[in-house]
Image 1 (cartoon, helix red, strand yellow):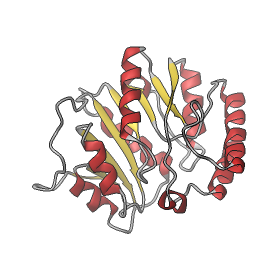
Image 2: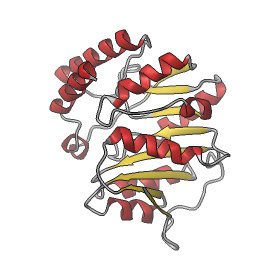
Image 3: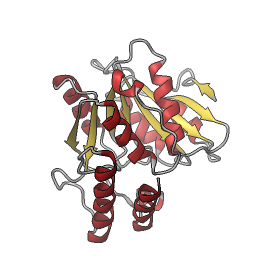
Length: 240
């Protein structure tokens, strides 16, 4: 694992007035050079601390993220999203001033304002984990078959973990420092999402769900938000 600081003179937006100084945003990164710069720049308008974990990308994703203002931690080879998340969380916890950790996808499908609202809720309600849910308020547009497949994955995750969520496979989450310290992600592919839920259930952490909007673009669909990927999520959840 290697770490790349933001290059001098290309650090992106200046820190904002609030900047959530106790919060680190963890962005798992693999082959997202086309969009990750915009994602990091948007995050940096509201959060001072962004770490992208480049999971062996061959396309210059790490350099683009660093130029946009993120700290970049690199895996020498591709290990999977679960491993990238764990590396990013571990990095964030190295900062003794860290009070919360956000996980945020690199493909542009999450909104910064949703992440901010979830951090605020974590603090206001003294929670350890806030899960983003695209199903709570109906603001996310999903075709019927994809919605059914994801719902089935939720049903299985709820039954197997004892944690009753409406959306178990949303990459936007917020953890308190205590919650983040409980994570020990071992599943590298999509099954890591159910593993996180299971660990929250076993640890007895205080959790809540918050409505978020997931933005399905042509790009995000091409990078893994297709119907086939939803089926893969269901299969990996059942086998994981």
